[in-house]
Image 1 (tube, rainbow, N blue to C red):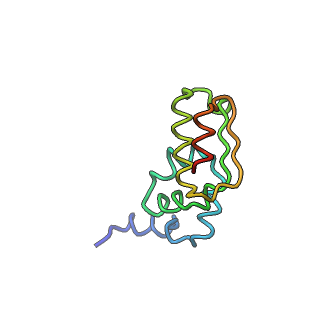
Image 2 (cartoon, rainbow, N blue to C red; image 1 turned 120 degrees about the horizontal axis):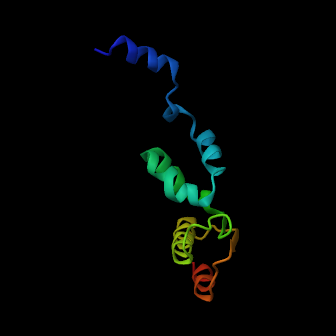
Length: 110
């Protein structure tokens, strides 16, 4: 049997997993590409599924100035992962400060 403090906590805090998918997709869609790749997809199975949805990756914006602490190689690897997640539905991409000919070729091939 649940303790009274656990029951009161459940009444006090909503279960975010019961939120409609459309609303959750809207919220997660506002995160940066790297936030979706690094952390949001790690929260729970439902968020991971949403973050893997190709519609979340139609627009990719990764700029080295914004994420200056990462190495060029790591940003390129994360960009390739985002491109793979787009499953060919990529509409617009903005990559600055670390783009290479190999990365451009990778984008075109996918």
